[in-house]
Image (cartoon, rainbow, N blue to C red):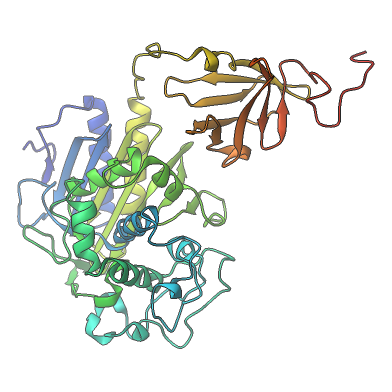
Length: 466
């Protein structure tokens, strides 16, 4: 370890960042810890799946020498982990996102909410659990599913808007248990945590771990916070983890891991499911994953808090950079934004260097034949073939709908984004095998502006262009 400042532990085994970038990160983390009055704060940066920087400041478990190993409670960062389990069940065909949860789970409240609505906090369910402050009281106070919801279980009509619901994730945890036949955390550890190398992400704290504190608003004094087992509410915020483990999860959110989820499913989770949360449209929520806009970037991750703790995890897939922050102070909201600031600091100071271009191996002549300029009516477009057989459709002038297309086994392509997401691109050939035109969800693209009248819907004026 090296000590750049008093009580500041910066790891010395990473050399992945330039000195100026490391200095900028140190300044941000030190400022957040001091101005946020956090008893301790640890932070880490991951680039291209590898931890490249980490530091800790304050009383980290009485001087634990490695800030990456110290456990903190991660609160609602538990939710995207539970969401991954639900998406695995969907991919296995054990449920559909459109299923009402009552199809699989016997619950008096929220039975008509769909799985997708629970994942995206759009079921309209109440924000908090029945009874006293659930985050500070033993889960034994809510022993049955019926004890989770209070008298007003639904605050809004289902599917209309984003309304954060912790009890909604209690239902999702129960759903995992019903379909897997065992406790949700046991499933999570086997199917997600261990494959990703997150061995120190646990249900209850394991040494070395930080203690949770509240900080007096008008004095530099602290008060211990309880750390209870929240029982049925645990899927909403029970877990403990480390900067090293959350760095691995951040890398997963940025790049995926086929051992856990396919890239297509991860893309689905990151896609906004409801209207943006913020009045300025800078934040939204997908299927268990938050997204925010920061300095022109879209970051994916989640914030978390429990009494005595705050955490943030954000990843920029475009830059291949992610950051993790953990603090042991109640209501330290800036710890979440700090992680986003760290991502932007690294991405701006050290832009990603693209990998080398290499020609594709064994390019199919039939695919080369469909590349180049095309026209939707009189709108010029260009179709480019990538090495993985995906197609990129781009505009060559004003207007025009761009999209990427994924190849399918039947010789068609499926749109991945934009207007054509989910639509089918078909290459239509003449009887002699030559290409006639492209059909994208009934839209016809021809090799010349308003090409042959027999293929353009509605025909083309016989007089031609004037």
